[in-house]
Length: 93
Image 1 (cartoon, rainbow, N blue to C red):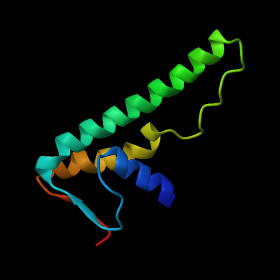
Image 2 (image 1 turned 120 degrees about the horizontal axis):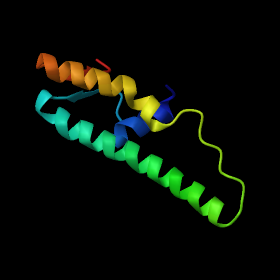
Image 3 (image 1 turned 90 degrees about the horizontal axis):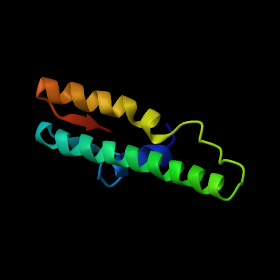
Image 4 (image 1 turned 135 degrees about the vertical axis):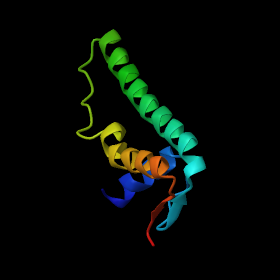
């Protein structure tokens, strides 16, 4: 993942991008909820663009090759595994 994409995923978690970080087990539910909300928001925004194009009889916009849902999946899985183990998720150490 490029730095820009990684920073976007961290922002979706509600965190400021940083080379080092930690998500404590008790923070995981809020992080997952924020990530899910960002994913749904991105998908809704794209659907709105498609609806507007249809309404104006314009060509449909091209869907990005990789959307936040795909980019965030590995982090989402890591968060779930860390929470299940009762451990923090740490990066950049």
